[in-house]
Image (spheres, one colour):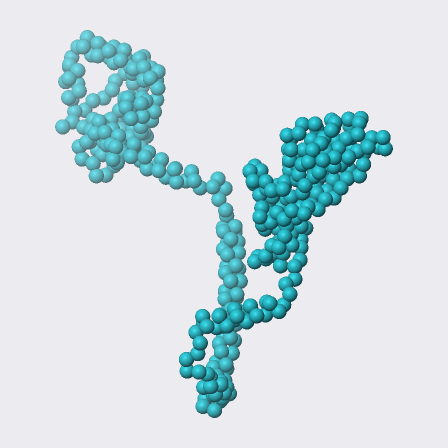
Length: 399
């Protein structure tokens, strides 16, 4: 087989994986280089006047129109020499040794190849398992890892500083552990000393042994069948009952007040109710027995705005309830007809009252909690009778 040198002309092709045109060409060292290019570059190479398709066609036409040997005969001739060259170029070309196609391919492909052609080399480079695309996948995986690294990683001195800080902290904790170990050793010494002392005390005739013997002398005098707990409780109850009849119970009381209501304006409507502020009772001792609960009512002043003598029209009452909806009111203070009278010939305003009820309301107000009160069905002779700073409270007697 006749050896032929590989021309250094480029081979162009389409890379379907990268979706781009590529240029394949051997470099000056005979290594195969693959680079990306554009369609315009490919077309320009094909149309080149010196070595493009038109130049190739002109050369073929010249060979076919000549005389002498045919193109095939020239190609198959073992030794060929270019003519029509200046002497320097002719000498240079003659000095180039014949290169075998297979040897050149081997040099381009590297060791370990046999008779692969250019297409097989390209297919090898495009292999999904070990080709360029596999290499790109590996590079992308490496890049994904390196993307998570800081832009400016800490230098060695910063790392050493962190290690020294951690070491210092660890030393401090170790020192603390050593201190606790020393403390445990100290306590253990004390325990051993106490144990030695106990051994002496528990010895027959020792201090604790003598104390137990003295207690045993007392317990030996107890009955063999002492009274059970119920009998003891019955004796205590009987003693308490006897004592209670001889000791006079001491009754005390506590007062509780609701906040002031700034003003209550009475009208001539006899069915009107006037709720006051709620009252909170807290502090009655657990287990206390309520003896009596009475209500308190305070009015700072009473003013007439009718221009005539004015007073409560008809008997009414202050009623209390444990229900915010006033569903079960109890009369706490009775208010008679013509109460809170204002004689306008003297003044349109007079001082108020502080009333203490005489009705026991412990059935409704029976201990700690929140309670409610209102002036119920109250009216006046003329519009209006104003009650200023109205508040209510309770006094609880208990023991």
